[in-house]
Length: 133
Image (tube, rainbow, N blue to C red; front, side, top):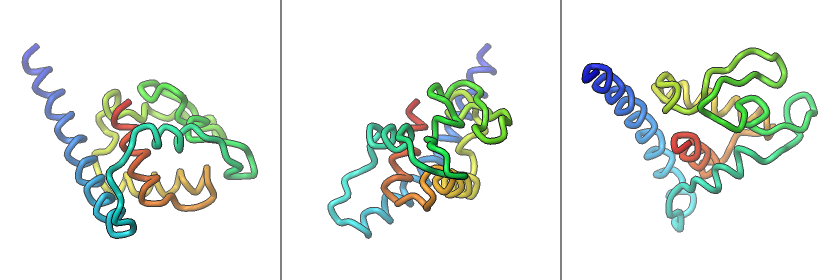
């Protein structure tokens, strides 16, 4: 039992440090863009994540269209019905384990939902929301 707890702790430390490193980079960028920047916000992230927009293929979608409302559960891609593993790193330790992968999917998903790349503030808020779910 102790071994399982230790392994789970290592996964938690791993995703936390990678997510923290990514958020630190975004925070530095946000501060340079706006000297009044005071940190990322879970509530703003939830708003960005759940708000609907005319996105990919002209359909009204939000991040929840593919990732669902419970980020700890498997969901399905709105367009392909392909299964998507839980987005929350608490339920899926593979999430937020590599900065390049985080950047790739954040960029791709913002383009799918918003038809544009997310701002630094939006990216940081969304990541903050996801890792706190």
